[in-house]
Length: 462
Ligand SMILES: Nc1nc2c(ncn2[C@@H]2O[C@H](COP(=O)(O)OP(=O)(O)OP(=O)(O)O)[C@@H](O)[C@H]2O)c(=O)[nH]1
Ligand SMILES: [Zn+2]
Image 1 (cartoon, rainbow, N blue to C red):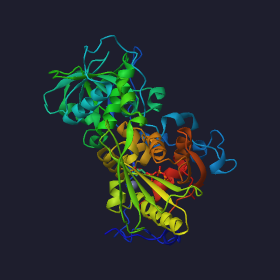
Image 2: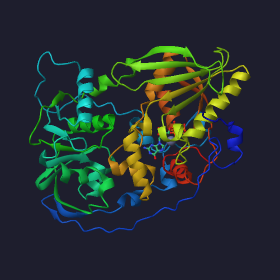
Image 3: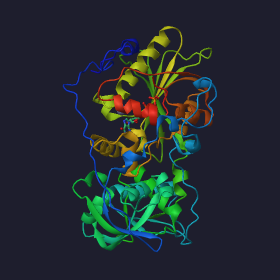
Image 4: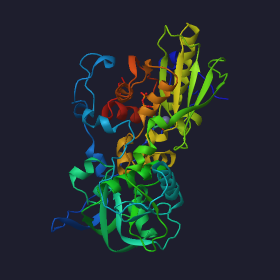
């Protein structure tokens, strides 16, 4: 049975509060120093033998730089400046690709609907089957490819990954999740392509290449492919125009926008759910026809139109929520939120916990665990995601707004330290009457994770 501890106890500074577990030892971190080779430039493209280095570490923004953006209103207090304000539209709103402008090869008449095409494409990527985005060559996912003989000299990878291979320019690599096209001197089969796709294999494969960076003429389709890989939870790396080609699932870049529309979400069912924190709790389940992830809300206390509910938007963390992982603060935050809401209900108010199935900030469990592996090599949370070619924040917060909307909740007191949640919910039409800080005691394993949240992601942590 899960053990609950009140937030007050957790806030009192007790180590590992909220989960009642202590780590046996405190592990030191190995920071690896590496080397780089100079680039050999030729005719505007970069052709070189690549030696990998940990340049991601050099790319850290300072705390001052992270905070040097526009002013924030209301919930954060006077003078607060939001980090990454210029990129706010991308963050917390899983990218909704625009309608494709590339190419002119039409899908056949009577082909499946956009949502069905995306569902089939995601399924294909999980099985290792190729996809064919309109206007783009056939793309074979590297990670899941069933036939090791599938080969191509060209690969589509993330700009961030291309940067670690010394192939992307700074401008492209700034948006690490954006795509880059590379060409090898000879065809790469799956065994050769995997170390290019997976940074976890870098230590065993320090030498790669030579590669040529090619101009990408089907950008929208390539961006959609990266996004589909994220949704499928696989590494964002594809063989381009592979041999043998296999039967590809056809779709358009713009199909993703239809697939991810919050309006698709509806209440599926609700039931009474006595939980340790509160016996009269209710659970509400949400479902979209398109997305297999089923989100839920827990309602604690009796709905009361005179009281603005205390709301916690919690994103799934299997490791923290279920196993009590000490690497993050998710487990204590989940338990703490329910305990505070139960107290609120005792005092005549009510609370709503939205449990969003957006594991690893939207990159999925396996890719989060890949990021953990890179963190063991010294990368922080953000750099580990970047090195994988995945966005640091890929959650779809408008979906949370849709859940509140479906429950008839327009005004909330939001428990969070993350200003982007506040901004994203407000942009989606929810009024945040108050931001309620939700900080719990750190432990030696999550100190760096919390410092990264504070110093690089702008979370309001002490
Ligand atoms: N990619 C990645 N995700 C992580 C890592 N550690 C935790 N997470 C995920 O981060 C998310 C944390 O979610 P929340 O606690 O709801 O949100 P938050 O952005 O930390 O903001 P708060 O509301 O202040 O807690 C969960 O989905 C975790 O699975 C990590 O190292 N890498
Ligand atoms: Zn966690």
